[in-house]
Image 1 (cartoon, chains in turn green, cyan):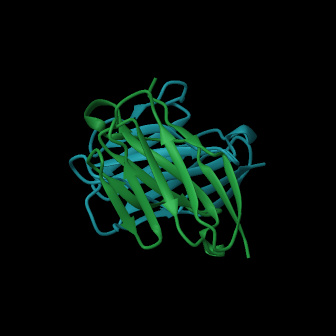
Image 2 (cartoon, helix red, strand yellow):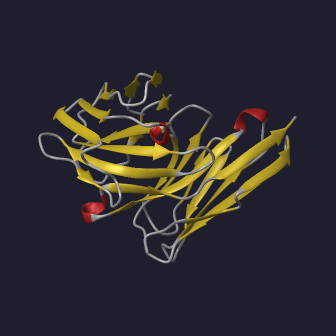
Length: 112
Length: 115
């Protein structure tokens, strides 16, 4: 089906550590999106990837669009306490790719 | 990024009453708007997709008569939860996008509590 499998489910790390999370699917995606959601807020777009093999950075965040178009990863370098939140991968689905479906999310906890 | 404003951010209502949630795109024309529901510690589940001036398309299992969606203009969509029950308590989030395969931007969400 059109599911996004995201892992890990949660991560507990020390401030300063690097973080890596990934998303896989049995279906091909033409776009991969990475969002961050903080408690009581809507998701905020971090990085959008449009091309297989693309590697894009946004500050300490780096994301890559897998060459098979069935996976993507997000790395956060030198984590800080404000990185705490839920990170979702997402991708377009449905006719014309107008719907956006989400992975289950990775909960990140950063200890100062 | 583009700004999507959702109102109210929190609402408490009595069981049996109806609640309306507004979603506005402030600096772009939202050709398509999406409504999601999120339970605690879970991901966002798409409820429906609405295009300006036409009827919303609901996902399987979502009752269209219970969750009324109106997208009357290019900057406003509303979700009305009718005859709300405690099990409707959830975090409702809208997102909006312009034409073409562009990414959608999200509102701040509405925490609905039905007592």
